[in-house]
Length: 100
View 1 (tube, rainbow, N blue to C red):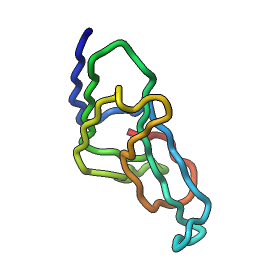
View 2 (view 1 turned 90 degrees about the vertical axis):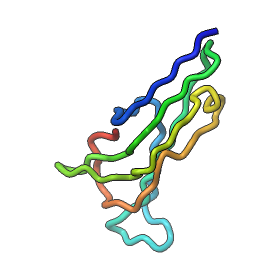
View 3 (view 1 turned 120 degrees about the vertical axis):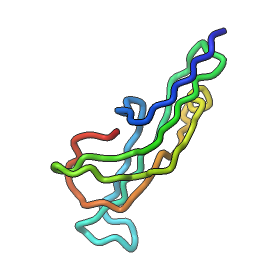
View 4 (view 1 turned 45 degrees about the vertical axis):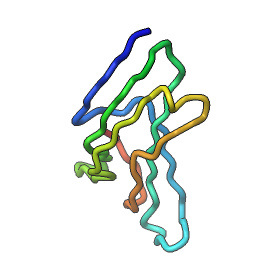
């Protein structure tokens, strides 16, 4: 078996699930709750550790920080429907071009 360790200061997240709700309780109609979750497919490794130092989303020409907490995950624990919350924030409703 192989081990793989990655420390990523800024990463374009390809393995993520994003959920937005139209109007959760306590949030106005111009705001929404953005949640960014991480998941992975099974692989033939002993462990695959990845560290996120920041999670942000691009709205218009402005990067909005969703989480600035450093977090490390073993991707192999996030398969078969399991996810980890990378961050959540109340943000302006609209179209976000990128998440990193």
